[in-house]
Length: 420
Image (cartoon, rainbow, N blue to C red):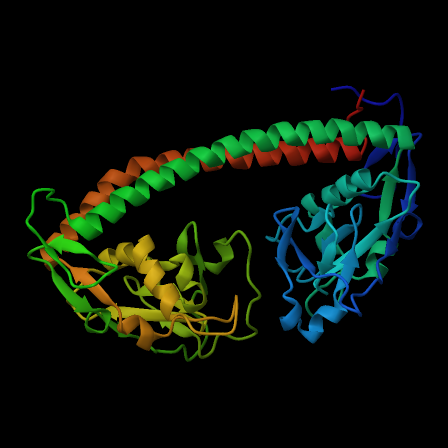
């Protein structure tokens, strides 16, 4: 690891010592607040920040342009955006992004224009370091601890020469590409393992374990043929919705993760906005089937391993005694069943569309005898255990690679490591 010839005290705790010849300038000397609004609706590409990358969310349909889009900021390539809300949620990561496409962003983001004297990619890497070191969480104000331009204009930014900035960007781009490629390879293995796991589950819950069992037409298009001794039952006869509410709000808050299922909210990678009080929240018992009504199209169902409480946007079900709820969870996550949910979802758009209990109850389900349901669940558990363990190993490798990337970025943009 090569270091610079001499260092000086930055006077800023999180930066520590910095190269002697580097400057430290306030944000207002390097950045300018973006005030360019989409008032005449000239820009119709909505951008969004996702895990540190700015993606095109959607193109606005000319005939359906909401008035709100007039208040969106127009951004151009080379601009930097920062997600500026909910700083108290310290599990939200990668709040900064470098704009690569023309588009508009919501008021949840702060748009920044980099002075032409500086390399925008270098400034982004520096702000990214400010983000990943969690220093960002010391800033902001208000009830929801949000960032504003007033916070950014006072932020100390380390400035090497323009030549060094360019070298740093070239070096980090190369490092990031290599690490991201390694991460993508690990993710590809996870995707293949998940595909294999889904095949095991799908075959077991739709055809049973006996490949030689006589079959019959279910009479339901999406279900197709099923073992002859299985029944076709409406879900309303298998589930009973529980509407029991918390009187004190003191129970453990639970949230649904697409990766880990229903877990304590404090263990979520990204903690959602917490209600000021949980009095009246829905109670969950261990063994209840829970799902987020807003995400039925993603198969976000889970049998709870915890006692606790959940948001009113969740539905909680108990078994009527005719179905193993874990078996139903597996069924509800099959692609064909999810396609039925999608047909019955009602609402006005993403984030507002729900699968209501009455619609869920109207769906038919192929149901084996209880003893066979239990055997199928055991078979799935036994045959997916190794797959889950392998997925966990790859996920840990991804975490280590991401950590390595963050350490390299931080060391380089704070001058701890000299780029040749």
